[in-house]
Length: 494
Image (cartoon, rainbow, N blue to C red; front, side):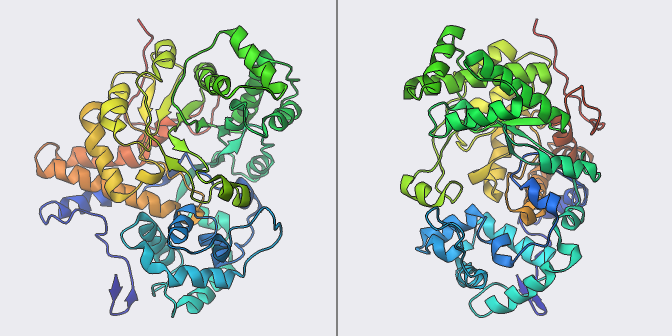
């Protein structure tokens, strides 16, 4: 809002408008507002944190890398070049950051009603102390103020990490990553606060154009020569071991389908052999990716890494844009996703295994009440991940609670994950989630379905205890022990 003294944020933003519910929501929010942030699923570059250098300029920090922001502007005809998104055919050519910022500020009205607007307002006001909305008129003034702040030590990455109250942050890292930045951070005392996440997608989709090059890199990093299927498994297991030693808590899998149908070993060997020759069939490649999800669950049951699965996104919907701009510029589109039959093989095998922790995400919200909540509501190894990507909006998160609580309750969810590359938006995203949960719980109190003390305790669970427990380290690790609170023990399958 704009007050008499300038731009500010309303203290009741995103809370219920019902005058009988809002005071209750305020009280519940007050119990969570200052809790530490547990950020266990994100895409912040560990190198940015390890180097801890000043961010170069407002545009490269807040505009160009934010695909939520970029896709909205592109949808209104703003070219990628005007937003600083680089081109593959012009390496090293960069846009004037001030012009990029001017383009963004001029188009500020496009974000009305979107979560991007909420996050950006929080960043600009709460993090950087601006008191004027972006606009064509204010663009240069705001740019200069932001640039001045970014030069100060208090706005370097690790200083902001502490300012934001982040207790632990998980990055997302290719299975072939050296983890050198994590090692550097660990040597400087950050091991238990900045941890890697094992993301093997590039190696599990054997029809990818770069698959054989990635296998060669896997051989180099794992020390295992990959001549066939069993070698591939051993190399992946070796890399998982290295990630665990570096403090990893979880794996991350972004497949198109949730299919987990296992193949026979001869079939898996045949497909890998064909892929190594560059002759794999697309149908075989798809079947192999499902088989490898089964294998990833088997490995997680053995080594204790939490397995995160978020299927259902068709990546790079426009191939021409992908070829010119690369991935992650806004052209990933949700598709309908089936979980009940797709996950049945892995749940038959490991759904009651005490070593597996499987966190399920979706961008197909029709599945929340029909498929995912019933699965999480009965299998001890399964938890529901937070509304993700297109659904981490005020209304999307509210619909999530309404859809899943009846069947899964609260304890079968994992609390909030921010899933962002935009480092400065992390506190904004957690703030919004806490406000939405406060509003949902306040309605249950107002309807006499919960007592206030129960609602406050549940809010603390959702904001802090549940993510800590859901992403506790493998039992062989010692750091980051689970806190007190709700127990989520899994029993042996009878």
